[in-house]
Image 1 (cartoon, rainbow, N blue to C red):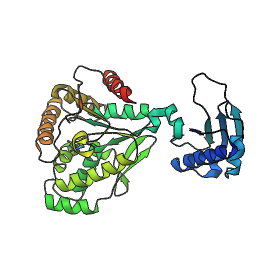
Image 2 (cartoon, rainbow, N blue to C red):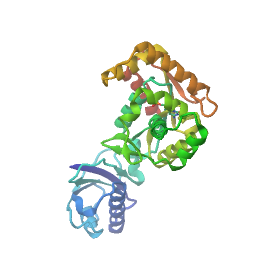
Image 3 (cartoon, protein in one colour):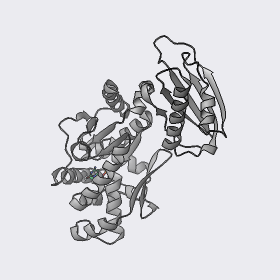
Image 4 (cartoon, helix red, strand yellow):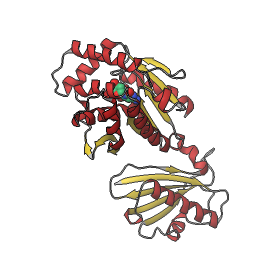
Length: 335
Ligand code: DC
């Protein structure tokens, strides 16, 4: 069962206004959530006590929502509360990710949901970007885009095709036909290469260096940046990577640059890989992290770099919670 919420305001307490607002709100919820009208079990409205002219439930029936059970209630009058506002809850039988819809002045009720924001988190590998980005996405109910996964998928494609990751001409050819898609299942990013879920495969340690190498090539970056911008343009999301704040989304509303000492990052990666069952050596990981830092920061195009307007957070001595709290306090100043 899923409950989807929404709200809309009207200018005057008039039957026609209520009818058109209810229609607009319900149609918008249906479209934002890809719903079929038949799967809406019930629709429950509440309206502020300054609305007397018409029942929103009746307006819903007239707007064609005939198969759902409908109910309207009046809210108590709250001092300083929003005026002339109709709120709604839709009950859907299946489980889906709900996209609430707040229209007109009702947007003020949920600024966090209605304002489109892009949060860029850049930094070297092991700085904790993905852990932090995933948590922010969950807490703010927005999308998380792991851009590193896309470069990892490119590296995997090259390896599967027997193409050397430094071989620009052949990688260019691969990029012309690469079938790379990003999907979301239960809030987690799924990376699909040629239609196959490669989300686990791309996490293998040998793919990390290959991804760093392949990501130096202009043909790879151009293609990936285009895809990343396309996703970020459509919805609020947290993106983590190396060049999000500098190149992919220079106008992102929020930019953070997360870093930590190579030792701390190597230890985090070591713990993460050991927990996944890989038998790894700390010193080897540390050397590889330093090598990747050099490669990622010294490449010609879109090197790993802190954007001038990004907030720097050194997490060497900070817990994940402390980093999240620091970022959230910055976000809350604006949203
Ligand atoms: O974040 P990660 O470790 O999954 O990234 C793998 C490699 O991909 C990284 O070493 C450099 C490259 N990358 C990039 O060049 N630009 C990004 N926005 C993200 C990753």
